[in-house]
Each structure stands twice: as C-alpha cells, then as structure tokens.
Length: 76
Image 1: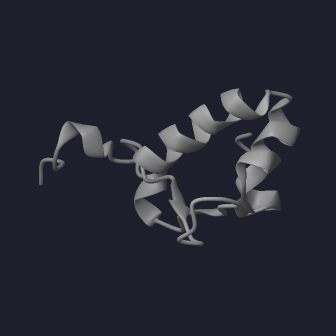
Image 2: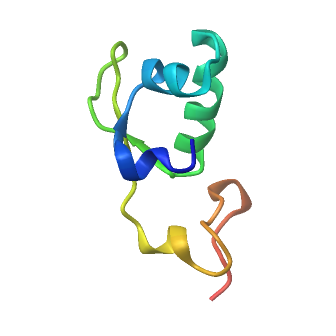
C-alpha cells in the first residue's frame, strides 16, 4: 500500500480492500488510522461511498516523519 499513493492519490475503502486483499471491515481500519494521522483526507463529505486523498503535505517527508496529532503539537 506504500506505493499506492503514487499510482492512485484518491482512494476508497474498496480500493484498499482490493490492493491489500483484506475484507471490507478490516480494510476500514488502515483507512481510519491514516485519516487520524492526517495522511489521508476525506474529500466527499459523505457518510457512504467516501473517497480519501493522500495529503500533499511536505511534512510527510520530514526526517522525523509525519506529525501524529494524537501526540499534541510538535516542539518548535
């Protein structure tokens, strides 16, 4: 799934399921975690048939890695 953003920057849980071979219920977990980590951003505003876009955020490529919002604000 790591190379997937370069091939398809907009994904759905269905796409993750197809790429990983996971069942639909299990494929929701990495999508939800990536959304919480702000790696994916939900772009439809819907409850069903949602699409997620990989964030084009330079901080994703920082030496320290992406900021985990669960850890509070990063130190300056």
